[in-house]
Structure formats: C-alpha cells, structure tokens
Image 1: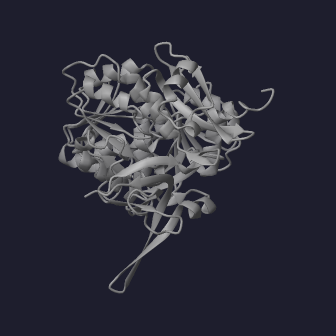
Image 2: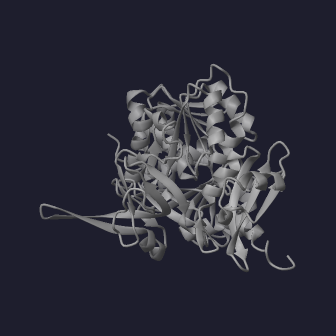
Length: 526
C-alpha cells in the first residue's frame, strides 16, 4: 500500500530491488539503487535544515538528479517544485519568490544564468549544484552545496518530518489565460490516486517501459514517472532535440508507452516507424489530437492503442476515451477516469441535459488543494459540493474547469472550448477548435491556431495562423474552408508561415503569444 508518493519507489525496492527503475542515457538504476539515492537525497536535505512543508525547486533538464531531488524532497517531508528548464531567469525568479522556495537544485551553467535574479529571492537559503562549484558566483544569503556532497552527507540517516496523504507533495506552475503563472498545490493523495487511476485504465504492469518526453514540470510529463513507479515499471528520460530522437529512443529502449501533446504528435506521426515497433499504447492530452494525425499514427503503429485524454493541472486527469470507441466517437473526450466523477453544470450549479453545453466540473481524490498564495483565484475555481446521505452531510471541494463541454445520451463528453478562448464575433460565440478542425481537414496545413483579435465592427475577428504543408497558400486554404464553414465562422484573415507555431513551456501552441502578435491586425495603419 502506498499512501505517499515516494512510497511507490520504496515498495518496489523491497519487492523487486533488481528491476530496472530509471534510465537516462548510459545511466541505469534499479529500484534498490533508486530508493537508496532518494533516501540519501532526503537525508542530505534534512541535514541542511529543510523544514516540514518547505519548498525545494528543481531547475534542471530531465536527468537522474532531477528525479532524485523531487522524490527526495517528498521523502524528507518537504514539497518539490519542478521548474520548466525552458524558462528564463526572470520567470524562474518569479516562481522561487512566489512559493517561498528554500532550496534550489540546479546545474552550474544554469546557476550562472540565474545569479543576478536570485538576489530577489529572499527565502532562498541553499542552492545545490550538479557539477563543480569552481568559478561560480557567490551570494551573501545563499549557501552553495555540490550535489555529490549532499548525497555523501545523506548517508547518515536523519529522522524525516511526519507526513500524511493529505499533506502537500508538490507545486506545479501552470500558465493561465492572464497574468503570472499559478502554483497548483498537489497533495500526496492527489498524486498517488492519479497514478493508480491512470495505470489502471492503461493496464500498466512492471513489464512496461515508459518514455518520459514531456517536461517534468508539466503534470502530464510528471505523471509518466509516477505512473511508471506505481507499478514497478521502467521510466526512460529523454531530452530530445529532433522528433527522430524519440523514434530512436523507442527502438533502442523497447518502449511500450509514449505520451505527447498534439504539436509533438504532428511532428512524429509521419516518421518511418518500424513494423516491429514495441509500443503498446499512445496517450494524448493537452489539446485535441486532430483526426489526420491520429489516422497517420494508427496506420504507422497498428499494434499501439491510442488513448485520448483530457485533464487540467488542478485535477491531474479527468477523462479518457477507450481505444475501442475511437471509430464510433473519434471527437469525444470519453468519460471520467477511475476514482473520479465528472459532471456538466449550468452557471447556477444545476446539471445540464444531454447535448446542452455547460462547464466541466471534477470531483474526487484527484482535485488539488488549490493555488499557492492566491486565495482569491482558489475561491473562483475550487468550490464546495455538499451531499446528504441518511442525515450525514458530506462536504468536499470540486474544481470548476473553465472548459465548456457537452455530454451525449450515453454519457460521453465532447469538448467545445476553453471559456476564455471563445471567440465572440458578430454576436456569435465561436469555438476555435471548430475552426481548427476544418482547417486540418483541408489537409494543407501541418499546424493551425484560430485566434480572436479585436475588430472595429465585428467585436472580434477570426484570424488563423497556419504552418503550410505542400505549398498551400492562404487563398487556397480559405477557398477550401468556405464550403465547410458558415459565414460567421470563416477566418477574416489567414496568415501562412513556414515556421512551426510558437510553443509555451509545456509544448502546447502558445495562444496567448499569438494573440499579442495578431492583436493589431485590423487596426488602421498597422
């Protein structure tokens, strides 16, 4: 039984210590070795004075030390804060300050880049550095410790702080539609329940080998580790430069499970996958996978089952569509994952009828504790739900997703739009997803994003930014859209590009940046 997130590792270390747990390049750790490294990391943090619930940030690419630091912090009774390695110094400084980080784990090269901004982090006490401490900047209020020295000091056992499953385990920063990123606080219970739920419907076992491609600061990326460790499987870390690097890793490591977001699936769907590929399943989240991409993957990997999933960081994962439903309802989000309930509600809290659009609301063990240091936003999204059973009043927190969905008569859910991405044009509310689906169906673009931009007479006009495929131009694409879209949904402008669309740190198309770039499209003289 695992109640705390690091217990997954220690449980497998007891039952199957020689089973391979973690791979990074030429480094390979079995569960016995990984458990020892996590324990030494926890002891080292405790010997440095880490208090119960204090935050340990990790600003590293995917590597062994990253994993050890996260699970070691949890084991010590602290809270780990994975920071996306793509973020710049100012963004990192904001996160360290916002959640009052006490310890930072990073590399020597990254520390040099952060040096000036760390003076703005008053709670930061210790920086643990992978690599040499030579020729590094010094700080008046910050102590530098080499990673190897931390592990060496951790060989002396230290009493860890007592934690229960409801205590904080991690804070994941997620980009919002406005303002600075928000820190979503996850408990041990959230993370354990999430890993067990996903592993159950993916039918994961100790024989699986799961490739960790996505950032570990992304809940979907982190779940590749937690799901793997929950069943004693092998997690393989990769920092890929080219899409083909993923295919090479799948072949070399005999990977059975691969998770990605839609823009990445687009890049790898047409790769020359071998006929004897070992992939057992594929998962998609972070946006709808377009049908042409899904079809290409199914042709290339007929033995791999695709699982289309929907989730939000505030509740980890909410729904999935079983592979046997793909041909019957390919545009569906599926139903609630095990150990979760997902309902569709009207603004007054009443449940929507089948086919009626409403807000997706998630309840159950996966609902996070709220936003760090932001009670106002927490109150907006996390609200109590009350049920009465034979006089017993039960109150729990549910999360309102901000996403508009509908359900059919059989209970399957369908995404309509993110509420703050809805385009309001000529009095109509238009889902960018609907426009993008038509764009992709034209088979002339590799990537597309529909954005609502200010317009003097329409309120907002629809502008599509698209990565051309096979030389298609804007006029040709618009001509193909006209028979497929009503007039009010036709793009007022299509901008073709020969470069991939910009991504946010989690690998999704950066709609906020595109909105900024396109906001003056219809301003006179722009």
